[in-house]
Length: 495
Image 1: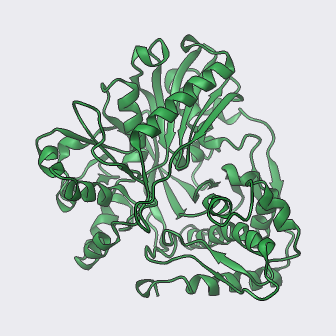
Image 2: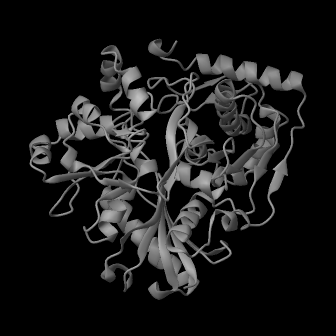
Image 3: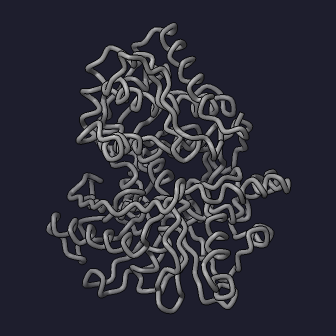
């Protein structure tokens, strides 16, 4: 067999990437799908559209590569995390739209849990802070707000899953209700120490255990596609949430290795080895992956809006026609002109964790224009990353090189500015498709397509390096302006 096919199901698009035995891209297909905003702060997707677009791009990618199902050794899945889907066990029909990780509707529930003093307990078991970001509150909302949902769930008629689980259930023809440890660890229902759903947390959120999928290793044959999907069964042999997959795709196999993915959000992860590391600086402790019965953990800082700010510039503000326009527009002015854009459209993630903060633009003058706002939007991605890097250094000591990936990492202005304002080397890999690559490597390892971890480390071409060029005085001045702008976004509870 010639290929591994990666399913890369993201927040704004479904993608499929086919890799050859050298882990080089043989074909790609991508399709955007509908973003649903029923109320301010609410974000939803249609689960059936997620699956239909994902199936279409898988078939398109195979066609583009000239590949039959018999050429595909295995499928690896990587996905937007925390997004919550509930469906009927018998019919397979979702009972409500998928509630997306960005959605903030459960902020009141999160405040209530904090007021009940449950923060330490939940963090101890899950490694997570109480926040609308995670799946548990979304699942409780569906059970509480969809007519008859709780009663049906308690009778065993409904299933819950994150997007990976939904895709595997659909691809297997309803035979597999399963997730991997990395995705399970993002639900706020999973004990990352015992590697099982936690009965006390299930009781807190009112979730029947019978709804939950089986949690397994991230690499190894998990299930098979139904024969009618692609013409013959293909094993699904790898699965990980998008950020953990990117960590694996960047070959961050050693304790202390760090990557940042510039996608819809920006997610900085550090491999912490076989033991979970706690944070005192607003970072999350999460499962990176499970392989061969051994679990690897990571520290994570989550920025909710990174590349999504570029989409906002294009779709809502209509300041650009394509994402590529941001680079030349940002370079066309010497600096930001004192303008800072804080894209707290869905609250602030690490290290602030203020779910009710909202976006703002500061420093506008009569001379401020489109180019300054576009540049400020790009700069905001780098500033937010700096905040997470500073928090991670408080927990883990001085960090070295940052491995960058994700769609926005293709922007040379952003990568150089990131290196400048963070005062550290940034390395962009030969193949920035590291999320899809991580799913490929996990699946290839899981089905024997690739030999071992050492072989994985040898795959791929030479990276590109960005080194700091900015004076420390200028860097300090810029960061001071950024932090002043961030303070202006805080809600009362975030001050």
